[in-house]
Image 1 (cartoon, rainbow, N blue to C red):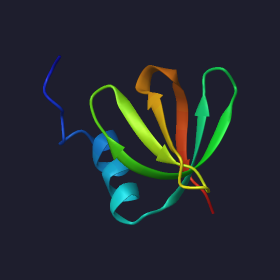
Image 2 (image 1 turned 90 degrees about the vertical axis):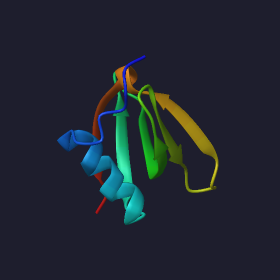
Image 3 (image 1 turned 90 degrees about the horizontal axis):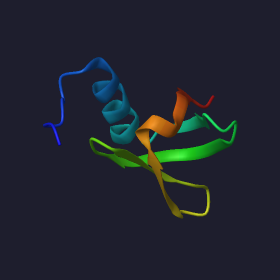
Image 4 (image 1 turned 135 degrees about the horizontal axis):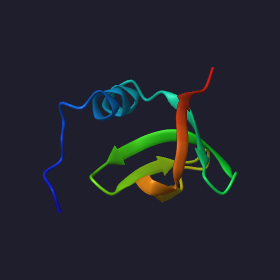
Length: 70
């Protein structure tokens, strides 16, 4: 596994969403739409906290897009 590239713009943007506790919408390649706030990220996954504070681990390759909600 390669080192986590914290200098990449996409990683920095996700980190800003985490820091600001911003609500986001994540669309998966399957068409499923998830909403909540990103709790953490690593090389292979993003962890989303849904409105009931349940942690949902999402594989990065499964993500079509991430956008701020609102």
